[in-house]
View 1 (spheres, rainbow, N blue to C red):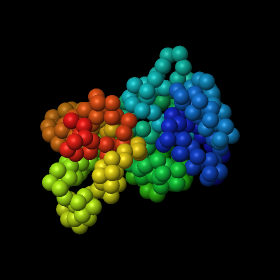
View 2 (cartoon, rainbow, N blue to C red):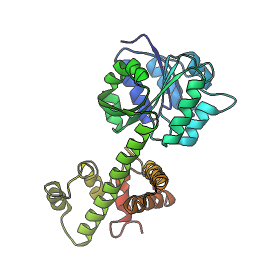
View 3 (cartoon, helix red, strand yellow):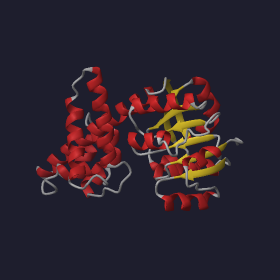
View 4 (cartoon, rainbow, N blue to C red):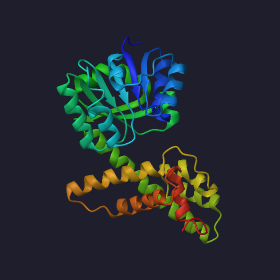
Length: 295
């Protein structure tokens, strides 16, 4: 058990379960913060820590601060808001930024942290909510090796495996690649099952055949039953899939590449958002491909 005081900024389902895991491991949880004040206050009561009203109070109360926010704008808000931000009084602190964001915002935050005398790492997660609670995350780390080694004992209690992939921003690039391929696979699976259904095939049979052939994939295991049953309880939302495919598209544009499959998958997830389906799990993309569902 570390004597470091640990805080979380952004306590949705992933952030809250990461905090619970570290509490279970005996770590000192000092503070939790979220724009959803009731959620922060409820989790604080559960964990026996504070729920400060300001970000600077989070920093003052903590040694190590995890951030799990929704997008680049939210990240800028917590680190660069002139009236209140995490970098006020941040000397000696370590920030571990875990959300799927653009590489550029990770680099901006790391530069700001360095000016404030703080260390900064990115810890991109390729796992689900249950993995966060059970300490079974897979983490891709970007940033200074010395800072990584300093927090490694804590990260080991949160994850089954870790990969230090290079400087700040590089982990975000790798995570964008992971989610790009996952989103393309999900869209392709939805089209395959949708066509199978339209041809009158039994989808249980199709899923079994897919699993034994070149059509097999991780998303076949995680999403195919939900696609067939129209059960799209959210583990990874279509809105987040659209965002992450967009990050990959931006990286491709910077590299001078055309990625037509990623562009097509992004268009489907963007359509889900436009139809008000962005809060569904990414498996809900099947609603756009199965005959008789959404147009």
